[in-house]
Length: 389
Image (cartoon, rainbow, N blue to C red; front, top):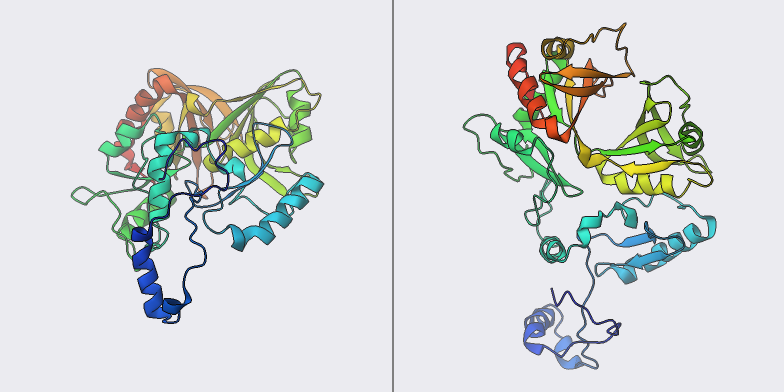
């Protein structure tokens, strides 16, 4: 990095010439195109360029403010992207909505902590350095890691977790076997974790698996108008019994999908919206921009609860072994949530699954998360529980 404290009046100013730095590049260019040796240099301009932590530019409406639009951080492809980015942003400003999917460059994909200067120095430097490196499949970033960790982080590592990172969250991508190096070995061929993932998928499909879902965004919506607000902002019907889970989308005026979420009615006046980790800020911002006259309070409670997904044909057996509550179809049908006792503590289980088999998401407050993991993991040994990425 050139510097982190860029002067306010710098704008398009330039830095001193540095021919020693430029000379090897020029020599290589002359070798490729000899006529450059006689062309001469008309203007020598040495200026900094802006780069973002993920090498994609920032476009769109600033999440913290109304009617403040951003087109910045073009990562040395400003000229290449100018026409399309300008057209998209102008249309977005005119219509009040994106003309097409701009999720990869929408500024709301960024997390607030990514404004940390030490983080920017480390991650942006690595990202730019990798631009011309081999873009191996599944390549993980090496710098600025460990910023956000779930309550189960240490226990997952102790059991062989190989971590990846998304939106700053450390997440177990797969689990190494005893004696196997718990790290990626990058290749253009079959990956070194192929068999590990196969075993994890097989466990969820035929027996029992457990994985950490704590990084998913958890947004609480509460107030006297909570139901009316949810029915306004979402495409589903949220006037449902307490404990009912509604899988749904948030739609824009043209019917396009802005968010893909599950919504659980916690009480007469409170809902929990669960979003993907990478879109938590975008989804929360979308809701906040549509509060209007509704009397509701929106709160990000992501860090307040750990979540363990217990999935597979033996999921009910495991939960029944650690809790006196009833997990039958009659007491806890699919698409409902209930408060339970778990081990020596308390939890809330959502009966919902995306793996095609029986399953529950176990929500537990951060203070009791470690106990919940120990309880489920220990009891799961009798059923052949496998930790999954």
